[in-house]
Amino acid sequence: MKKKLSIVMMALLTISLLLTGCGSKAAEHNSGAASQSAPAETAKEMTVKMLNVGQGDAILIETPEQTVLIDTSDLDEQEKLRAELKKAGIKRIDKLILTHPHADHIGGVEGVVLKDYEVGEVYDNGMPSKSKIYTRYMKLLKQKNIKRHGLTAGDELDFGGGVKFKVFAPEKSVVEKGSKTTEGHDPNNESVVGQLIFGDFTMMFTGDAEKAEEEPMVHAYGNNLKSKILKAGHHGSKTSSSAAFLKAVSPEAVLISCGAGNDYGHPHAQTMKRYQMMKLKIFETDKNGTITVKTDGKDYSIVPETGDAQ
Figure 1 (cartoon, rainbow, N blue to C red):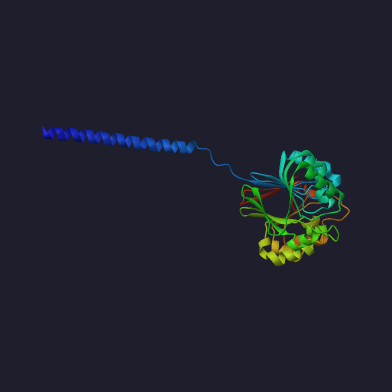
Figure 2: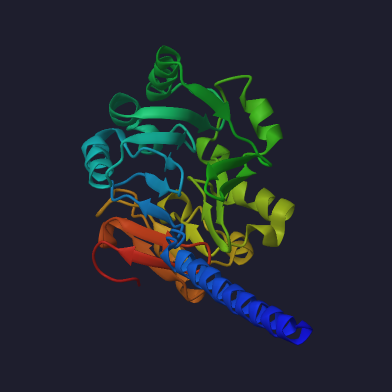
């Protein structure tokens, strides 16, 4: 009797173990199926477009979370700016950065950007100007209740999605002095200069900074200025892109915003020679149209609308 009972118990135990094993395999299979059906994480990408707006600057940055516009082209190029923003499908501008109050950088702020778009916040160099465009722009900000911030060296903006903008100029001492009066300003050398950072990708934005503003940055920041792409200062003028600044930035490519056959002769031959000696890939809006940079924070590509790099 005891022997029979033992046999029965062993049989029941064997069946139980088999069932448990099957259940374990089923659970394992279901887990794998769930894992396979889970959607893959969407790749994050940032796009920078140097817009083809003639003799002026307008650069559109689209991060995974925000749309940022740096400068707004010239007063007589507003229709070009409007067309470029429409082509890019822009609905809202989260942050507007105006590097300095010259007409070829703030010309479209009143008639296009603040007129056609909802704007979250505005940033500039924090200094007053006698410019009529600047005066009207300030009035519009008050009317629309848009916050305005002055940028100085050391500031950092969050563009969302892991994208940052680190400010290298103007220096605080320059801003403090310039904030007290509209007299004695040198707008080009009071430009907002900053580095766009997304993972391993970096791009230097220079406004119209000339050697007088570049030198203090080189002394203060040195190799921290190093960037993969340089937005040429002052449309490729000989007064910008000094040898010391180029050495510190050490870019792989340079993007130049300028109008075809412009009266200034931009970009100047001396500057182009410096770029060529560094074996940089050179793109110009007058030859290449709108220039698009795409990056996932590791690799990047530069795609001209027309033509090839020099």
